Amino acid sequence: MAESNKAPLVDERLSHIAFIMDGNGRWASKKMMPRTFGHKHGAENFKKIVQYCGDIGIKIVTVYAFSTENWGRPQNEVDTIMNLLSEYLDTCEREMEEHNIRYRFIGDMSVLTPELQRKIAYVEEISKDKDLLLNVALNYGSRAEIVNAFNKIVKSGKTEITEADISDALYTAHCPDPDMIVRTGGDIRLSNFLLWQAQYSELYFTDVLWPDLSKENINEIVQEFYNRKRKYGKV
Ligand code: FPP
Image 1 (tube, protein in one colour):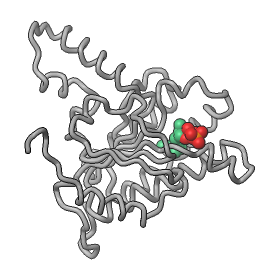
Image 2 (cartoon, helix red, strand yellow; image 1 turned 45 degrees about the vertical axis):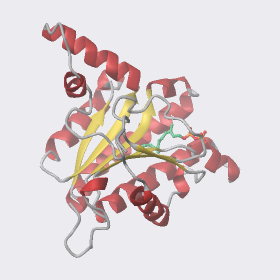
Image 3 (cartoon, helix red, strand yellow; image 1 turned 90 degrees about the vertical axis):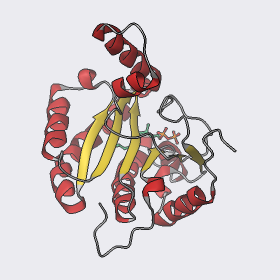
Image 4 (spheres, helix red, strand yellow; image 1 turned 60 degrees about the horizontal axis):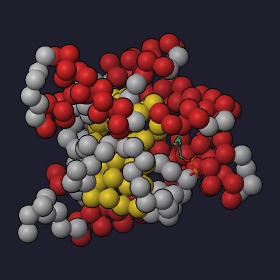
């Protein structure tokens, strides 16, 4: 929830925004630095952007932190991202109090180290009564999520299923679909992110590289959202 002394800029039409945080590697290369440098700055900017979204009244933020395909990157890059995640988890307890954040991790956590899994379970538990919902997609792939949902439904014994059954079996069952999905870094695709949930999401693509995404950019994105006509298939 936005603090009362900060006038919210958004209303319930934009309650959930999702980000594909792309461009860390290129940001670093432009500075003649290793890709891992870009991830460090990407992680810093991620915190700033989440806080700002909360400040302007957005209720749910979802970020694509690590995909099931990202394991195929060089080992030192994977290790850096996992270390950043671990360090980030250590700051969540303080962040949760300062910025009223409720953490949820979506994806298959079972392949993460026991230490990471323990930290994730802990921050999810202690933050569960907070208001600004932050979904961190980690070892996430949308098709795998959908297959997992179908298997859950099959195991439940259902022989006929509805759209609601599928939505309720996804990792995101606890929250509504995103109103807007933003991808930084110039590519124009969803890359296996929230494919089911993106049904009527407004899509926004920007060339800005993730570590450079600013509060002003967020204001532009919000402005663009309110300029769109959401018709949901109607006229
Ligand atoms: C995409 O940039 C970014 C990622 C695959 C990882 C995102 C990770 C972070 C923002 C930091 C860690 C996150 C947390 C939650 C602490 P890219 O490497 O694909 O960039 P490129 O397209 O320029 O190569």
